[in-house]
Amino acid sequence: MLALSSALYLLMLLASQVTAFTFNVSVPFPPQTLSAAQLLPNFTGAIANCAANCSNVQTELSGCQDDASCLCATQLVSDLRNCEQCMYESLIAANAPLPDPKAGSTPVLVGYQAACAAFNITLNTTQVALALPTDWDGPFGLGLNVVGTVFTVGAGFILGTSSLLLLSNL
Image (cartoon, rainbow, N blue to C red; front, side):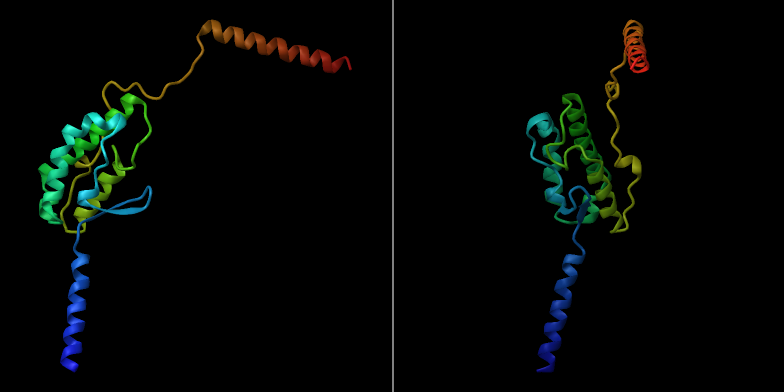
């Protein structure tokens, strides 16, 4: 009886260790843990044009089956980064919000880097960093030209002076 319970205990101990060595990517927004096959979103809306670019990445991620040496290979990491870069640039070009937190996401790539680090495979930050598109001119700032500025300051001066005159004559 003791041998049977010991064997059962050993089996349960070994079974618990199987899940300890799976390749999981933690994403902070919203907090969730994803397997490698779940990293890429559905390609709809603004990121639909990246589906062709990313289909081979999805195939590679699914084909590695939690093998960290395969998942953290330089070529696969580069392909994943290029896929995320495509989605990132598409979202910026369309000026669209994220349809899915996994689309064009730096946190997904940083989580991927951390998952590789858990298996003692180091990825450089340049391998997982997204870059702004070269034609991006930054956030739009509404500014006034010289004529608009003069008109606005003049209107403010007239309103302020009139208010002071009104209050002083009460």
